[in-house]
Length: 610
Image 1: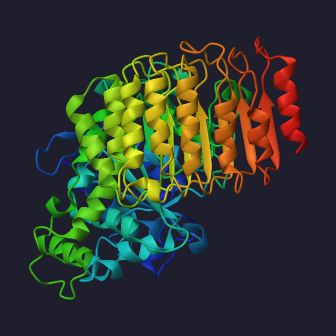
Image 2: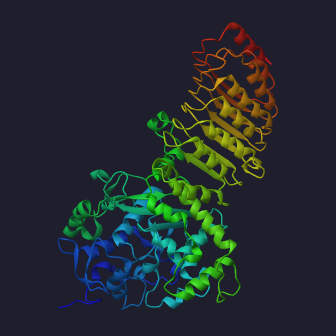
Image 3: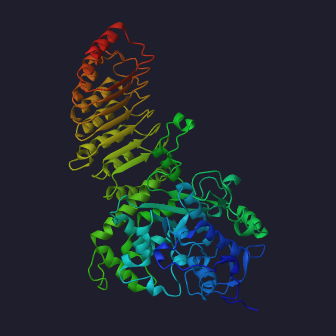
């Protein structure tokens, strides 16, 4: 006998109360537990090989499998028939308390991805974000029997727009081809985030499941401990110890155990997330992190470098005006809404500044995530696309680039990246520790970028540069960088690390020469530990100290590290410090400075006494 949709019994999904009515579609969130109940329901209808008994594809009539069934087919075989009698949404059918269904996150995705991969992404996201695991997912939350009430002429008044305004932000779940970027409703959901003016601004995170057999998994796929078995988290989905998700779910039946074993073997892979800001795990700095100099920004960069290049590259070419919709009128209404047209039924423009603004912000998000991997793998075209995307980003105020230990980063690349910095930046961090191919051309390019009229020099408030151990850098590049620093009149905080560099006194004086333009800097951190001087091993410190004194009206905190520097005589440093009348905190490190004599200490003491 050939089965047809509706032949199944759905009682195991329905609570004792028989479901509830949730009149406001924006409040119909689906919990992670309820999504896992869906997986269990499907699994119980599978044979030992994961083929779903009697369920067949609508077009091809081929058997559906647990690993590959997508939401189009799940809607046909489960969501619509299960809710046919009540003619309600799936969420209403399986819920018993409206308050527990209020969504925390809005999910934007394509129905064609495997449902099991989709659930993996939501599971990992809930664990990483540490918030309530209740999501607004259109297939489960809209009433599939009466969609005309949920999809309105004005997209912002549709169930999608109303639900977005109730949630903390949007999670975009990508398939391996990044299809959501080519779907109009997904474009609308992304545009809502980019254009939103609410406070706090909504979060936009992006997740993807990378299957081991795709060949795109960079880490963890061969480790049984990191295989994506379903796990249970505390009720609030805060941080805590992972445990089996199916403990207690639907009575902990034998099929749940079998599903767990099946997933360990047949659905191996990992979830990668590009986060909007830091995840809680990024901000936990352990003693090991401190040992390696890891900051939240560095941990975020290291985590996101494993996001698949193929998916991220698709993000570099996102064009919301080219996205497609199953219903052509939907695209017409959405694009007119994005452009701000008063007539949503009008012919939408093929090009518009509103499209460009949304596209640029989205492309920059992916460019930042994939930049290091592009450098490491020598992907020239992707590097060009990524830097172009960063240059057109008009939304980001702070950028943090992590290239530590990246031997492929050259001076030419850094100069090209510096030229691409958008002009509205108020914060910039460059982490380039032990980049063995980075030469003076990179510092020169950075200096030129800071001197560029109308560039970031006009508004930059915080600048952090870490070039520790970059052995090809020297005084020539440092002098060029100093010329750029001189233009940063709005800078409040400067942190520079040149540890273990053969920079020479000329380079140090060149950097210090830039201090004369720092009219508002309040915090200065200079790491010059073990800087050797090729050209002036016993050079005087007088000129360097005098340059520090030019910040006498604003500098409040000074950290100067010169341990292991032969040239650090400290003669003249005291006179510079004596001029810093507003200084509140001073830290000097000069251990193992073999050329330090009594005359230098006396000069320093004299300045400190004033």
